[in-house]
Amino acid sequence: MHRLPAILALENGITVSGTAIGAIGAEASGELVFNTAMTGYQEVLTDPSYKGQIVTFTYPHIGNYGVNEEDIESDRVQASGMVVHELSRVTSNWRASTSLQSYLEASGVAGIDGVDTRRIVRILRSEGAMRCVIAHGEGLDPRELVERARAVPDMNGLDLTPLVTTAAPYHYIPEAGGEWGYAQLAGEPKRFRVTAIDFGIKRNILRQLSAYGCDITVLPATATAADVMATEPDGIFLSNGPGDPAAVTQGIATVRELIGQRPIFGICLGHQILALAVGANTYKLTFGHRGANHPVKNLDTEAIEITSQNHGFAVDPSTLPANARVTHVNLNDQTCSGIALTDAPAFAVQYHPEASPGPHDSDYLFRQFVGMMSGVGV
Image (tube, rainbow, N blue to C red; front, side, top):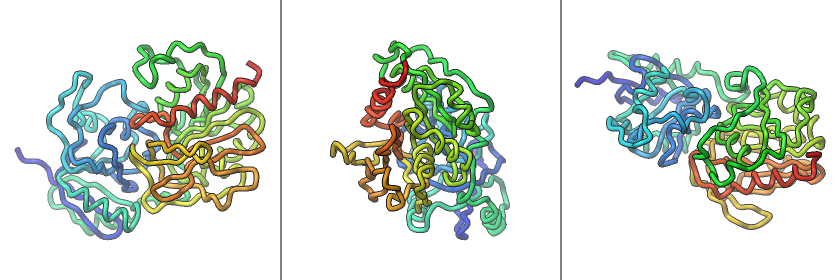
């Protein structure tokens, strides 16, 4: 069977030829990044933190266990496109409801396979994440595609939270079944009122907070401090999300005003926003951290956690003020992986303790948040 050709064009002038997958005939553009996880492609593709990015999966065979209705992290595919060595044409798993190809096609998301993903990753590791275009069709002009890649908006200075946040506040209703996270906690009474600011929140974060006894109200990224406090929370959660954290000016201002009023817990973009709110700086990593096996050292306990990560920016620890300290360090490159304030009940990490996909080594952070709230008027 004839398969339509495709081209991946990078802003540095390199073009890679392959085969069209996903929404055949469509086009994808964004920042090209790579993820080293061996499983969890559905969670990755639906993670709002990937908004505006095209994901290269380093594992060579993707899609063999298909797609189901339970493992999504949001209500749609968030990644702009997908690059794989081989997309499985066979789906074999009792939970699967459709194939990855059908899922991408229904979502209107284009991809490319039949390419050397090892070469692509080497390029990104040496030159950094870069803008790109995936195009399908016969007779494509590689030079024109490179120029279109160079016209894609740069991630620096880009606030993408309006594209992924909730349109209106809502109350999270726990899903039945207790299949995710730690099922033994599913029946935990809801003892704490938590207000989550949605910068692009993953569903498994909500599941884990709920499992630990939190009754959750979710507010849009544009929420003010007054909006948050009007919900009478016992604790405040700052979610993950896409784009340049320094561009999320409303969120930074809101968090700055909330510090000290209630316990605060942040993950990924939430970590960066907490740091920016106390006066620190963030910077763009060369190629980011995206995978499910990143080693992190807890400086308080000296324990090593294997973590799930997905971010392209980091906090500059040298710019942290006197009232903030580094609590976790990424052992791959010594970047800041966690902070805590010394004069207020607030902490955050630059990785995903809720996993999905990934290990559960860092689940204790949810217990730490609950412990902080235990003395707040409940």
